[in-house]
Image (cartoon, rainbow, N blue to C red; front, side):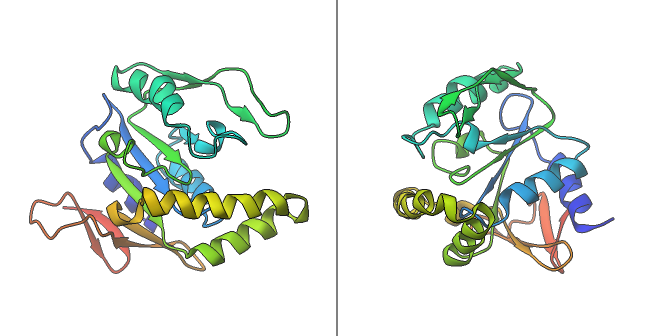
Length: 209
């Protein structure tokens, strides 16, 4: 069993947090590797649904998407219903056709701000990609190319302002550090040493008691 399989097994053992759903957030700086982790973790979970917060944000509302998230996703999942949201098209600058997000046993929500204060009450677990902002942003700029340089200039200012007022890392249950093969899974600031802790950590792995 590799590290992703162990993490998936541990997350499945958590109690539901949003109706019947275990809502797992993957947060971190832009370019830190959140999307890749979410995709790999979703596969280890047998095809768990993934909500990308880029689908709810817009050019004008980089972080003002909590209302859409609550109305279109969190409230339906809390009722045990499939969610339906309209992903934003960053090229056409408009919302597209509705997309269904089923109320699966585990649903991943991935994006900068996934662990913000308005979302945390619905979360079963908060994962934080442990990569600093400067390194993350450099990776993101390289990935997106020079055509997106102006967007990144504005983004880094907005992200810095967001985390200054609404930090996520301080509330993370697990810090995820990428290594050449796989990940290290480390206890986050929110984890206590309680003997009844469901998820434990040893040698860079998440495990269940």
